[in-house]
Image (cartoon, rainbow over all chains, first blue to last red; front, side):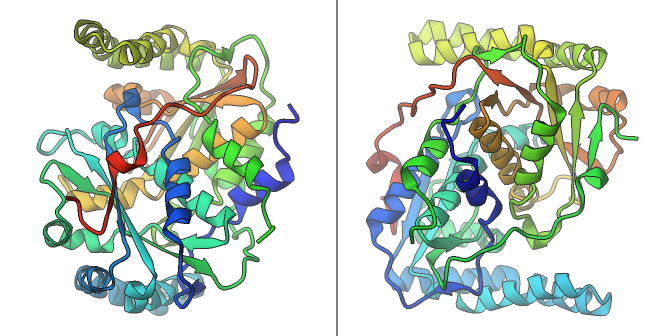
Length: 214
Length: 214
């Protein structure tokens, strides 16, 4: 059972945050580091071991600028509304999150690498929801492993979906075939400092039910 | 940058397999271990920091038997077809996966703990697919972190979705409210041995595209 030093592996799992304001836009990211992290991410399981994924690694500045434009086209209204609602309701933590998300939207092309995970979409039109769990459960673990691997090497990232509101335009830009679905846009950069802390969460007893819900 | 010992954290990310045949059904799992791993899982990020999740931890034998029944009701046909197709096409690795999945289906209630992650489903009817990425991207990272935490402690698990084909019946059994969606059923047990290896994967150059797909 001494295969792992829990102090270290628990730290990885508990301090990998969504990094938006602490991305170092000035520091170059070697492509090899991204590939190493992808290689680790791809060790995550997929339903029926299908591995129906492709990964776009966008480093070209012009392409990142275009993705940034689509990100804002898709997300600006959502983000502005979210911030306004959070302020109105006095939810300070929510307002901080939206403030940080707006900062990211304004600067996302400055992240030296964008990673767009794609999965072959074998679902019928308007599928039952369990199929979505099967499809996205076959790529999101790999995305999150990729993000954990980045964190272990001093890089930060964040799972974003706002550019997907303009997915067709992004697909044309990137050459994504029709039978593949883009799942996220992950900006990648070294972090400004590496001292990330566990986040505040509701106590387990409020959200964990043993045997039955009530 | 020496925050993490990459040999150890890479090992965690590269050797956490879908465990089906190597689950130790005889060994008791202390509830506290599951709670510790859930606490780590819940450090994963969620869209807009919504944390709209609940986690069902099913230890009661009668409930697990019922879940096993629903799992087979939902999955038997799919699994039998998958195995037949894999054998017909001569895909040995696929056949092994389905063989292993059928073993799990026949025995899933013997896993001492079932964990069912649920998320508040705020989507409209037949939502555009980017919304599914946002919703499931807000719980699958936590599920996967939970599974990684289990692995670090000598336990195994596997992300399954077959019981979701009978989600309404499972919801009634477990008391899941209508506005929550079950995302998976994760059987949890100690593993028979802990020497798991990295899996074979297609070479990166076949599935990673730099800047554009072609």
